[in-house]
Image (cartoon, rainbow, N blue to C red; front, side, top):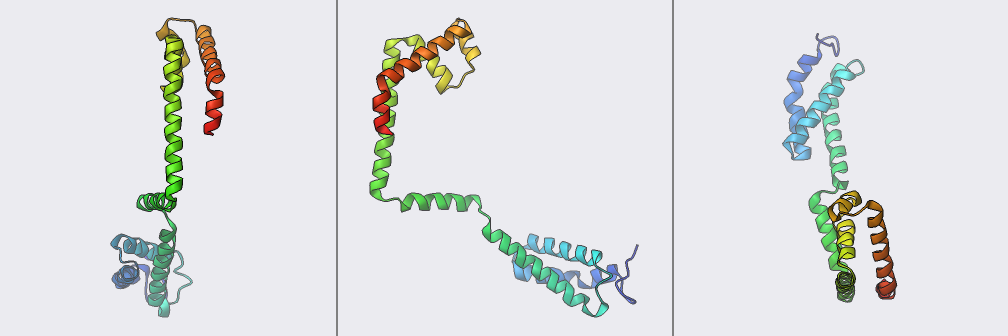
Length: 182
């Protein structure tokens, strides 16, 4: 079905006549073959939709303007999108912006946390190896507690009590040291 744009020209004729011009215009503004194709497709879709409002004398200029505006709007949108490279670059910039003193403070704090964790788990193992096993499986490896109870060959309630006792022991012995690190 051929849509009439005016008395003498239909959509198919306009497409055949101006498709290369619209594509070259979009390519000139975008510099990207795929964006130019998308702009051309959008432009001719709009022409098809609005064919009754467009007069024969200004079809060419309307097509060029529509393609140009599509590309310019596309470029505005793309400018504000963050790509993976931009995100990595922003993270690197933030890290570089930190002062050396701040970096040393953060590293020292991380080292102290690591040492405290090692100390807690070492002492917990010496206190009760079964508590240590239950805590490691439940809170480090995040194994479901039902599976832990089966593996340790104990009732689920016994496991709950074991974890509760281990947490109480850790809190009693290491609360002050932990609060100093915060």
